[in-house]
Image (cartoon, rainbow, N blue to C red; front, side, top):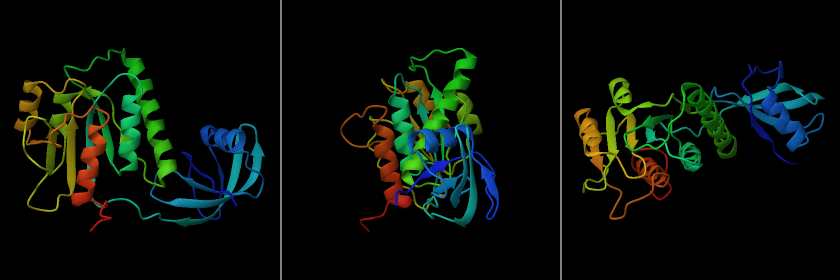
Length: 245
C-alpha cells in the first residue's frame, strides 16, 4: 500500500477529526489522489507523526480521523543554527532544503555586504514564506516531524547581537582551523557568506562575537555547497550522523 506523508498546520489529537489546510488538501487530492479510508501520515511540527484515516474528501477540503500518534525519534540532540547569506536564483532554496535533511534547527537568511539581492520589505515577507515552505517540503521527504524555523532576513550585525549559541564557527577559507571544541556543544551556530565570501571586516566582526574561523579543506566551495559539507562534518562529530563509528 502506498504511503502518504504531509504537513498540515492544524491541531492533531488522537481520536479527533482534523480538517487539513488547503496546501495539504491540494497535494493529497489533486496530486496523490487519495481515496476514502486511505491512511495518511500527517505532522504539524510538534515533533510527532499522526496516523490518520481519510473520512471526507472535497476539492478544497479534506478531513481525517487521527488514529494514533508516534515519534519518529530522528532529531539530533545538537541544536544547530545556520546563518547563511542570501543568494540569487534557486541556490538558497536548495541549500536550506539540504540543511533541513541534515537536521538543522533554524535558518537565518543574512544580508551581508556582498549579497547581490535587493528587495522591498513586502517581498522579503513573501521570500520568508517561500523559504519556510521549502523547509516543510524537505521535512515531508526526510521524515522529520519538527519543522526548522526560517527567520526574517536580517543584517549580519543584527544577528550577531541576538545570537545564543555556546559554539560558533564562521567559514573562512584562509584559516587552517579544523572543527574542534573541548566539550560536547549543545548549540552550534554556523556562519556562511555569499558568493565572493564575507569581507575581512565581517569576519573580524564575527570573531569579535566569539566565532572561530573554520576551514573545510584546500578547496573553495560554493555558497550552496559549503553548508552541506559543514553541517555533515558537524553532524558526524557532535550530532547524530555517526554511521561509521
